[in-house]
Length: 342
Image (cartoon, rainbow, N blue to C red; front, side):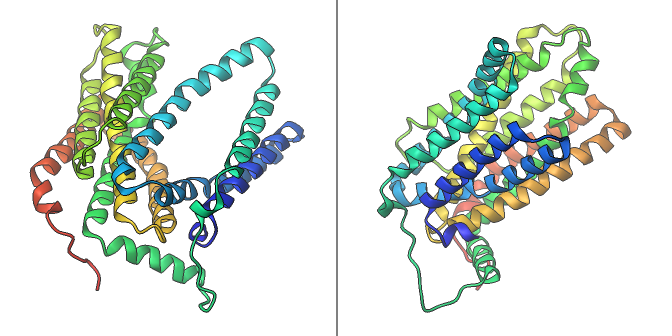
């Protein structure tokens, strides 16, 4: 909520500086409890970063280039998830010191803040009304009003929440499934994760080159269909399945992840006014974090009751069904921007 009151550029700089400082504190923390406290503080500060990032992008990127910008963000995000762990493992193997990795992380965050300081202040200027005192509750209500007043946006986000919940139910159970299929091949998670990263990078990179307008709801439906198909295929794999098939399933799932990321981020960027985009992102990620907590707990209970393979088959089927149903109903759902609140 506060991101829309402040300059997004200043928020990004402050979050990078404070996270850099918290990372340095981890080097000096004498006890596990203090380390956990610093990590909690660091994560709390990080929650301001993403809304500010998207707020400033909405201000500086032209409307006809939002799809390219969103896809480029997705590509860079997926690349960091691939390159970061590999680089960290390589540095750790050379130095045998985790403290050096933490120091390098702190330096990178400080450099990021320094680079942001050169961004012109005018592009991140936020209009203010000095005559009106705006409370946190008013900001929060304005964010909800913006969200609920837009039919297309609310449909896209509800669809995204349902698909994310279904996928998250089985996400943390992947290790359990792979241990049952091939207990002696510990490299299987690496194969699938590599495939997911590759598929996500390829799909987001592809859309960064697309110039024409694309329906973001269609992207969400395609992502749900691909992810659901991948999860369903995982439930069909057995001990005789060759390793390349696991990589292929990972690529399919990653492509769906990339499409879903581009679809939901593009829908928020396109449908939300620049003055309230931080509030809408804050609401979206608050609900999403609740899904990330509740869905894995639900998945653990369902595994005990129905079995791991049945869970993957059912979740994959319903995610794919949501995607296919969305494609069939998208014209009826997306034809008008009727207001839900007046």
